[in-house]
Length: 473
Image (tube, rainbow, N blue to C red; front, side, top):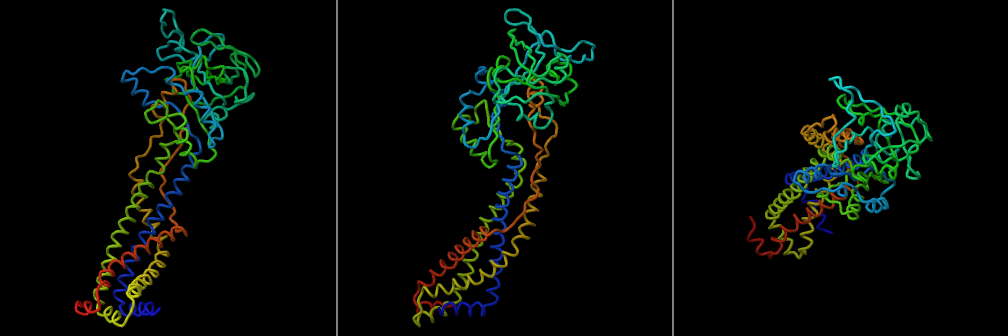
């Protein structure tokens, strides 16, 4: 073990070079620590963002694709605008699914049920509720007076979850309901003298009447745009939630338009979507798409993902550049010690032990640099990440709080307003050094030191002692 003693003596004798090597290794370890810590913190922040958004995935119509196909003149059938029941059955049985809700939008004309009256228009005419035009047989067709929401359960709908709609009498619709059950708004119930348990009939566009039983009465707190108040169908009081089986004759697409799946764990969102796509063959070119608040999620984690990507570049450059510089320093140091190596080799010293001495010298200095970098990594990494993240967040375009054009269109057609998550970009991450990070940095550091030390040694050690004496500077 004499080569270890010589390593300590050499470090002490060459204080200047040892200090330079110490500073270089300290910078390398600190930057690598910072990069790995930022990446780990980014991963944790992304997981927190996903948990905040919840474990809800929606399979719904891709409005953009529908518009593109319509503009291109491609034929779109009713069947293309609905999700097959077989697909829903397959997806709902996936192990990640805790619950599911299916829904579709439709309408009903006046018939026997009296709607809440629309407000008069500014020109003094009555609300727009009567004649919409003529059908193919020349018969006049009435504009729908009621919005019909076909669902398998109502408690999971955004309007009931955020208390926009609230049950005041009776019960919610559930998947276990038998027969044609419905929820009607308080104003509509009072106008038609209906209470829980009563029956009423809805009339579809083919003038067919379907009887429903009032299972519950709800009160709506929805705020309507003034320009929509002149349409009976748009009024919150004229919205009816009905069991899917009974309401299928009123649904525009004649099928399931949207399915929402509540998952057991937010971290299973990606695996669920992957599995569901395999079962349904839904892809980016399809008229339907899976949405897990992707836009909100991307907005939240966009800045930290860019910071993580940049930190990964820093780590890569640091390891490559640091390794090359370290190898150069070791090579120059060894070249200056040819005479020392020649003497030791001529005295019978083993070449492997001689290489071990040089390696031990660098490892000792590296151990000191590693220890100090462990202490500095947290504060240094936090400062660097804060500066980088602040810059990225400032570049992030602020989102508009107003409803999107698609949301306004959905409301105008009597649809359910999408649940909008107020997602702000993550503007702070907590950088912390874990045992796993220390292990990774230590392992990479040792590999770097081993390669940067042994490779230059091979060029010198392969020489014979006589050549080392004659080639000494």
